[in-house]
Length: 491
Ligand SMILES: *Cc1c(COP(=O)(O)O)cnc(C)c1O
Image 1 (cartoon, rainbow, N blue to C red):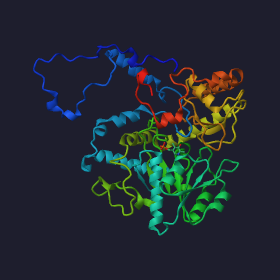
Image 2 (cartoon, rainbow, N blue to C red):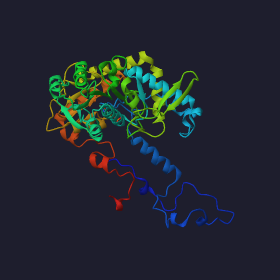
Image 3 (cartoon, rainbow, N blue to C red):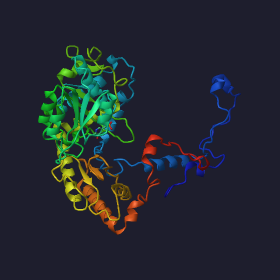
Image 4 (cartoon, rainbow, N blue to C red):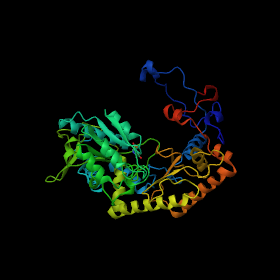
């Protein structure tokens, strides 16, 4: 632990209070009359004794330890950490939305239903799809929804024997995990020297047992799969369907549409591409869109509009539906923010956002390639992947570079992903950063590269300015210790 502020138990003083109730002027009601005995504890847990100011400082200081897009540059590859306009927050907090109850009859929530119905329509237009469900809570949840739709479609067409989902080796881990959860075997296709799907390998691999292919385009190297039409033909040729992992959609808005590329099912990560806050595990939203022939498989209910009565309603009558995937309306706050974002930018604005995201990524990749390996030195889309330091000095690795970046006030890029690049640093600048910010980042990255040679220990012991430096990340994720323990009861 470094630079650790005293924690609340350590500054606790017996008997100190933030607030005291006045003494009762009547006989108190015996508490046992209000709460059944079995719910009463004999004693209180050992709570810190603090003044109100100390409590305020404690939480304020804790909040400052949290790094977010509103506090600094956040080039976390594949996560599209773009600015979340505060206008979106205003819209999501409007009392007419925020105070709705999920059990309200739909006659009394027409405004919200209209918004959701219109969002469905906008996403259809952006994706080239026919109908969306807004239920899924995140990208991975969207994947499961989409793959279940594909499975049900095959089953209902007497093709239940199809048991394989093809996934390229550049795929995000959620893709094979999703397919496995839905009961499929995974067939991995290697990328070729271009970093793209090896089309000849794919051609050899497909057969009548293939249920579908999951693909991210541009892929996780930030490269556009330009053979996508041929890939679609090959998969469709054996009766399989194509699933589009839309996590990288920020590269293509208004430029290209998954539907036109030949995809049958699409998810978008609204918390990435459509500018709603994320990090820390949610909430997000991963709406799933499908082509016409898969509409009847969407989760129930979908939102429909009665044109004659001008009335929005939930449609539970979906003959082949896979069933409900999420309670109530999905993550409505996120949906309202995405809707606001799309309306604010409009079609031209979305097109421009992607154009600039791509420009920024290419600018950065070219600026960083002097001191870092850039294995795919071609025009990239919205992100690119470096393969560690050109001169790693005395064994400086990507983790050390990432940790040292924190000392310069930057959130590190995604590291060690995609798996096919050794020492990977996956950088996604996004469109909302200025040239000055990008230049500042380049300067820090170059300084770190020089330090790797002049002072490698500085990197290997980084970060130097955070309370915790190098936790066991697996343990921290699997068994997080979420509350402070007094020193004598440390885990
Ligand atoms: C983020 C991401 C996912 C998963 O999305 P979540 O919203 O985090 O569940 C899937 N694929 C790719 C390529 C991603 O970047």
